[in-house]
Image (cartoon, rainbow, N blue to C red):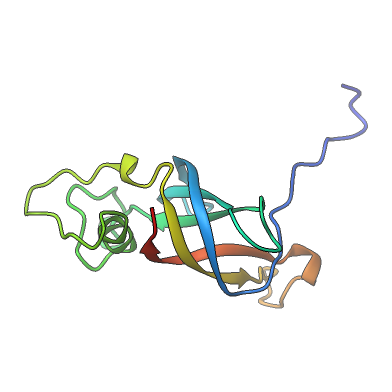
Length: 142
């Protein structure tokens, strides 16, 4: 590749906030720009006008007090709440392992929100930089 250009990556879709039916197509652990551990759940919309659009949900896996990845998942965390919904609203017993695999291939009703990034000075970036993410799972459908 010549050194006078770079190849653009794919941007995330910007669709209206709302409730959608999605299927979890894969998941991965990664690091955020603040170097905290995150779980990224990737979903495809499976109905309606935005069929086939891919959205993601980021879930923090880092204890904000210690800065380290959870050893035990707190019951108030987004991962715990999402896992319980993916487990058909069945709470885990103390000491249970909460596998990431519970999300894969299942269909969910989700609520989305629009992310509006800001510049370092706190002003909002132009709309071309906005994108839609899954805010939370509402229920597991299949």
